[in-house]
Image 1: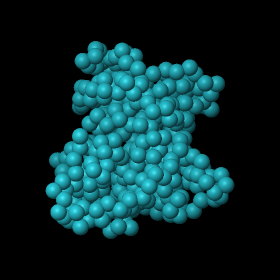
Image 2: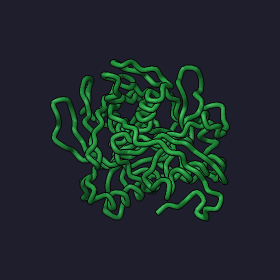
Image 3: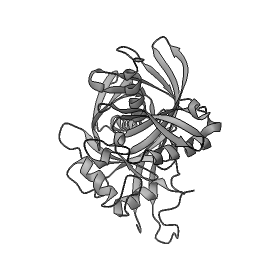
Image 4: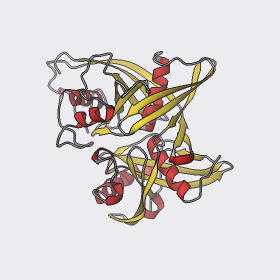
Length: 340
């Protein structure tokens, strides 16, 4: 890491950070022939998404996500080559504990970044589709433009599917039931009120503890297995939701997603919203032409809808927050940093 210089462009999508690193431009090697292979390589043999093996690429991740350059809530992505000419580029998503196979808020930020940097040509008025290869497949971030300004981004995810319903889970707050849905990553969905909680900032410590307990309890459950293999299997996030008064257009819910090892999504969670959409559709609560108004614990909003074949779309906003040139001073005893 001695003398390393890494340039990033930072965004937030509905409050959740996303730090973009163009590995191609900066000649940071990420071995593999596909994005999924590169993700597996980044994790390393014997590692997992939340316990990657150390290596040169993971040292860069640690440098950018850990303090004093990052923080426990930081999120980002390594931009890599696409699988083929059908996509504009690929990405490896990362967080404080490792790597993830899906990230809706990250895809939205990357759509805005691709247009802002001119990587993808966009009209002054109209839409620009940005096709992105992610470890779970190919997604599209359609950037909406008005008067030369980006006004929103719609994320179209890989198809979502329900894995299981009402799985009993014991926690220190009592027994609850979890619904499982796959939407690029596997999410367990739990009604916060079943544990005597609400989705508020004051409840976050209890929600995080419960999320960690539920994730551990469901480890290895057959419903969390994905037919494409271990990379896409296992609970990635636990989404706690509560009902709000419905709108004329459909359901209205507030949620918080606790993912990885206790990380809290500040946004309504893009791929987590996709998972909620699949569950609501199966319940008959979300039909054609209806939208889910999905609030986060910070008060930001995504709007989601389900299309034929389990395909979901989630719309939100993404804004650039800064550009950075991070260095690793060879005399710095903290090295890649620390987490509290």
